[in-house]
Structures are given as C-alpha cells and as structure tokens.
Length: 101
Figure 1: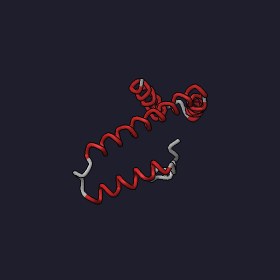
Figure 2 (figure 1 turned 120 degrees about the vertical axis):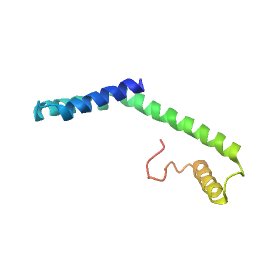
Figure 3 (figure 1 turned 135 degrees about the horizontal axis):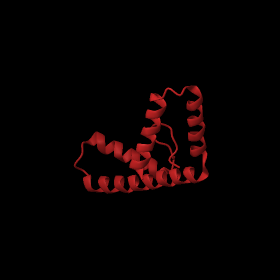
Figure 4 (figure 1 turned 90 degrees about the horizontal axis):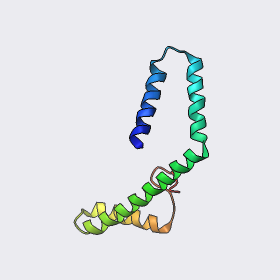
C-alpha cells in the first residue's frame, strides 16, 4: 500500500511539474488533493498508522535500551535515561516540539 501511494504521489507530482496544461489544471489537482487529505477516512487511517508507528518505535526503543544496557558510552547512556524519564513523565513532546499524540 505504501509503495502504491508513493507511486501515485510521484506520478501526480511529475504530472504537475511536467504538464503544460497551465494554472487551471494545477488548481484542479490541488483542490482534489486537499479534498483527499481532508477526507475523514484518510485522516483516520493516517492517524492510526502514525499511532501504530509510535507504538512500534516505543517497543523497539525499550528492547534496544534493555539489551544494550551498560555497553554504551556514558554520554549516550545519560541521553537514553533522560529520554526514558521524559517518556514516563508524559510530557508528550519530542525534541522538535511536536506532539506524540
């Protein structure tokens, strides 16, 4: 599914950049893309995929940090501890200020 979506987005982008149809066709494509992006089904699917990705990343983070343990330099271990504390405190923000929800 991801590869199809990537292909379709690439195809649309190539068409928009390569076409000589002019501004009118570009505006039609832009309006269609906006309608798709605002579709509740698409938004729900994207949000559930993002949530599932966050869950998998969290599991992988804990597995890796448990297995690596003391075999990393102190600076890295300190960073991991601070990340772990932040995730248990529930601040819900990452380093870029975006929400994890």
